[in-house]
Image (cartoon, rainbow, N blue to C red):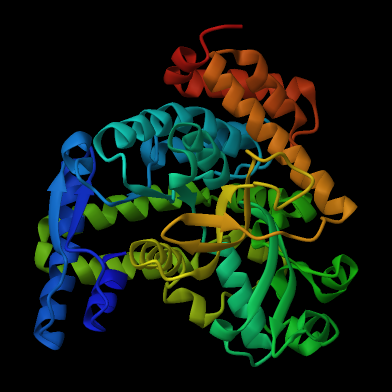
Length: 445
């Protein structure tokens, strides 16, 4: 994000004067502070332009007071918590992923109490601030925070913009000049059209095998299945469409002595923070190497399951989350109407869901916030998946609101990737054992 802010400032369009980093872990603050210092020094040397100052805080009230824009990226339980989310699910014989299926439900149950407390602090200390939520599961967390903050919270994800960008490049189109008809929930959406020059170019892409398999989603899902769908699914739908293959790929990795994704990242992050503490002057280079490795190994088991799909080189350089977040911030701060795919309350955009359900759709963003644009109805298949997963989200919210384990059990049991009520009970019990704090959140039967 700071790199994006520096680039913005270099072009004379900087919209902020100060960036405040808040974390409960002082070691992390020192390391990331060192990364940003190297970026700021390089910016000053090469551009000679003013840059946003950086302040660090371990107290959230001090960090939030007076803020105009808040970027919220929280991982309750840290990366070791992700490992437990994965391992409990895999131990029960179902998919072990942090945001999809059982792991996502556990992550949501643990995260919502913290996200809601944070939202209330924002409302008290920075009532005029806009919140851009990065925290996963992004749609679920944004919907819960909206109960406190209303439309002043917007969820973002880089998957939709990445999919649209890759599809545009496959058609030799300028991604900035193409409009995406994208619709769904966070990590559960479809690109249904790609408009340029006054016409939808997606049918042309679906009919061209070479173009369709020239980018990641085409290779991940296969041209035949994409033509059967008549659209391009978000990469996370691989966990739904190829659930057995995704689970088997992870099982093979572990059987061969490999690690879950969370375990890989625990090691990587620990190595980075240790090295950055020892040589803070190298913090930026160390961070960039860790970021690059993280991008290269993203969804590696899924790509192996699809026959060894390699990531596109353009997607290894970043430009996803920070691009969307900066665009939201500029649109709001400068009242520059911009069309962006973000997570907001439905407000009638999708006829299949109620007004308060958070959806991931194209929105018009300006000083008044993000307003969803009307979308054509979902197909029966899309509607069934969206409504099923939204029902699970609502059960998670109800479990946290009521403090009851019963809605949590329903969430596990009714998720499309959990195929047994008995397994759902096993999952709930397993997560209660793995995370003692859940016993406090879900204190009632």
